[in-house]
Amino acid sequence: MSMSRLIAVCLLTGVLLVVGLGHGLAAENMVQNPTFADADKVIPPTGWDIYGTLGDSTITLVHADNPEERALHIADRVSAAGAPGEIGLVQRYIPVKPNQAYRLSAAVKAVPGATTDGAHFQLRFLPSGERIDIPLGSLSTTSFSEIVIEGVSPADTKTVVIYIYTLAAKTPQFLIREVKLAEM
Image (tube, rainbow, N blue to C red; front, top):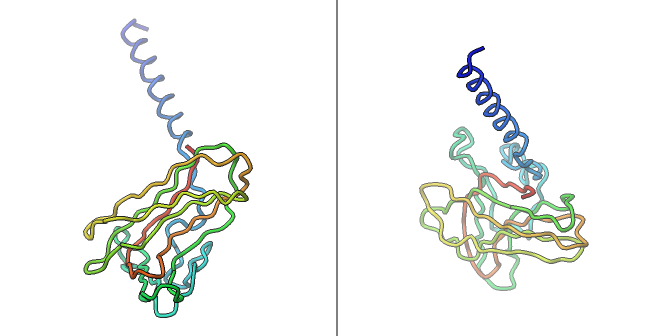
């Protein structure tokens, strides 16, 4: 075998090894039903629970036949503080490790003519109750944006809870397409 051919084989082997290792490093999504697969049949989708009280508010599937736009539409329609109006989805008791860095993300989009003010995303560690809560903020109405929470679980952590919710005193609406939780 010529020297140039031997070098080419070694380089190719190295590239294949790095590519193969890279696939093994992809973090597993720990969320059950992260894309709300059966939302066309049941709300809340399998693996999720309703957070709060729906009342006049709604959680519906939109664009079911378009994979690029398919999402849940969360619409808070109650604006009185203290009234049953906090709504959203919650996924409880996902087993995690203590002292481990986690990344929680979601693909979200604003609804034209509506506000996202009062919509939040939360990662809560149990049993400590420590939480990271962020507002959805200003979102595009034309494309999905990724919102991200990163944090390290406290030493006593056994599980986490994910909340996607609205505050009672506001009337936000938003679309959510996918949720991911992974070790970092």
